[in-house]
Image (cartoon, rainbow, N blue to C red; front, side, top):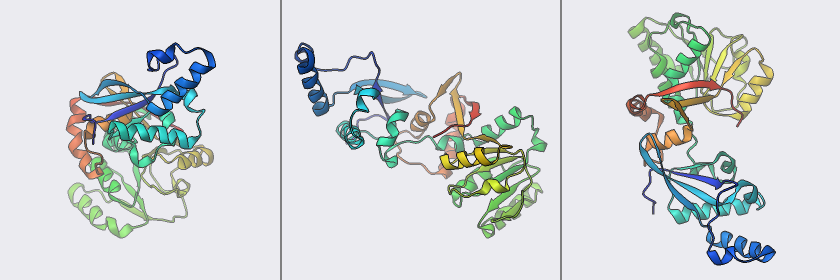
Length: 304
């Protein structure tokens, strides 16, 4: 059973929002009233329902009958139970939750917004070049292999009109055909380096797709700009602590014209009722992103 919406946004109540309870409970005084109101809220879990729209795609906003401060008074397992009960009762799919609620739900239930950096990778590299005064001829990308199709997707997005390309990988044989095709099409002979290395590599912009917490940062060029797409917090901490020379980005602020929109909501709207979409299908979403004039407002470093 689903609720008929393409996505659902689940949030806690604001401090000044009325929590919906029956009128007779409002009249009960003092501690007695508080006791029965809390029992009612936990048993019934009434939610405020509102329609919302992102990129002209309709979704539903559900507001919990608790502020975040009151919700935190419950044990963690009770908070998880509350959220799961609402999700099951409301037939929710394609869930985006308030950031503070994410630790209480299984990651597999949630839209994480991590597709958006891949969808906007061309624009991301253009933003970096503009921000750091790198012209197209001086753009020297190093792609750190993900070990899966993510790398192929990113290479397809950035692989045209390059004067330099290095791929850092543990599977060099996989890229032999790609290197030959790239040379035949563009005249560029890409460099494929096999891990582990024993010195710094050349380049100026690192596109880090590696989902493992490897210490690849040891090889990164001096004063490199790193665009990290996996969202791994450990890598952010390690790089920022041990490579102070590096400029690190892992957050894409994407705007629909002038308004920055949460990447998770953008992903929910673009994917529609699909609960999963592969990286290789992202290209089919680019016309829609262009139709809505999605632009990168800025890149930054975000703690997760």
